[in-house]
Amino acid sequence: MKTKIISLALVIACSLFLLAGCGGKSSNNSMNPTSSGNTPVAAASVSIENFAFSPATVHVKIGGTVTWTNKDASPHTATDLGGSFDSGSLNTDQTFKKAFSTAGTYTYHCTIHSMMANATVIVGN
Image 1 (cartoon, helix red, strand yellow):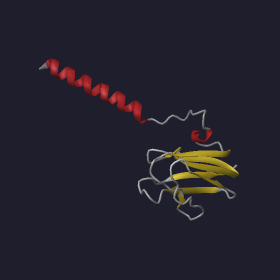
Image 2 (cartoon, rainbow, N blue to C red):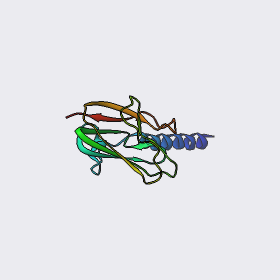
Image 3 (cartoon, rainbow, N blue to C red):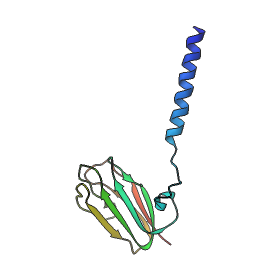
Image 4 (tube, helix red, strand yellow):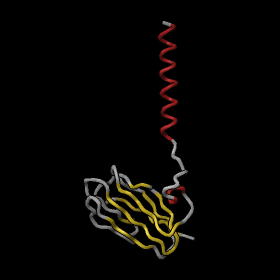
């Protein structure tokens, strides 16, 4: 009985350790500086893959551009909730590019797949 309790405790401890390692989001991504969170860049790229926008938040300078590329087999859109842009339906490997001339926060989603919501473009200096 004591051996079973110790084994169970070890399994739980290992599971918690593994889950804790999976939950964090690294902010050190030198390949795409827009994923670090707060440094605006002149151009950013968003990949639409596995029914998600990646990165979910990008920061661009005023006048900067964002290019979305659909890497899924299903069509997707990148549609601003405020109505300032809409990619239309993007098929596999199609891209949509948008220049942002006004500072602000633009929250967008995929109109085809409701679970693909709350991605953000933040425009500023």
